[in-house]
Image 1 (cartoon, one colour):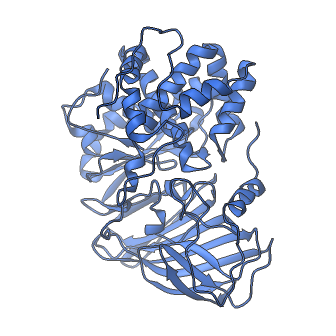
Image 2 (cartoon, helix red, strand yellow):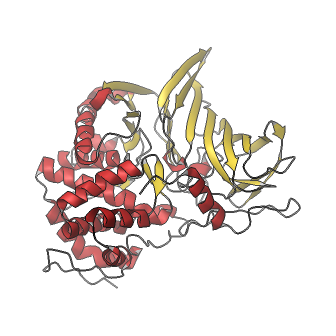
Length: 495
């Protein structure tokens, strides 16, 4: 995600196996076997920033989502969510994250199950307990409400002509029942039925278009596992524009049909941007890519997997410099490697997403628009102590503000985290740093990873113990001296 303030021009190992992930989930909650007679209670995987998010006891393999759009974005969609999962503990109950819709029925392995709400969880009780290591299918028939409730951030975004999704960080469960934590990635099939005047696009590749009278059903499937926060569905009077990227990559962009000609000069830049990113970190990790330009005001752009969400006005407002818009495009593109393919194990690892995306945003501006990274890094260094005081150190961010969960996206995990990467490159040298970046996205592709994983890999590649370096730069209340720039000064935080 990139928060995009528009008031001024910006200044200057091995992949973790699924069983390891299951062990992490199981260890986060001491009791996963819930007595059927006890009242339903919300659970979580113990994330430091979102303690009630996610659920222990199972590992989702796949989601099958079906939405029926009524032709207006002010009324609930009818939906069916089917979850295939492995149980990692014996379960009398299954907790799903779901907080904004009406549940009509639930089945577990084809049999009716009872259900109740507890906090932001849907608690399902099957007819028979599920033994550890069993394969189970959970089918929930429900509504999905595009009108936000008071105090809820994210989920459906109402556009001028339909809907899109913005589920980061914890809002997928405002759209569909799920295990809404990035540590549990899964495959997705997404079906959308809408009136014939609309076009529906979702993550992954198209897998069928079926017309039935006045309605059309569009089906998409991912080819790689995906975190729930990266799910995307666009419904609108849209044009889908196709092009080819590096290595014959299938690409598609989704734009308001009336704006297709005006937006094409921006869209045609993406293949070269992909080639540029590949020159830095290796081959693009997914089956397709494109931009979804939504006619909506969100205040951010978002790296939904294979189809990044952008505000249309970013590309039509003449006040934004060309280099700035292009660097934002690269920010979201780079997330496909950093955050999407390699997802954070916990939300405290967010700096690995945003710091890297900011890094490549800045590097692109330096190489393509003569905007020296060192200038922006010096400015970031000056502000760093203030960012740490306000938002916490990059790898130990403060909890989100009550009622505003998106507030974890503070400067300390953007330019503050990119500053850490700059310091690391200064410390170990450019060749080792560039080797680290390529190895990181290769080793952890399609998986999840932690800050500790990054520290260990950096130490291994540099041939040095970097634990003291990372302790100071990632967890210190004060910004350490910048290697190679002893004259840089961080200003004292404003009280």
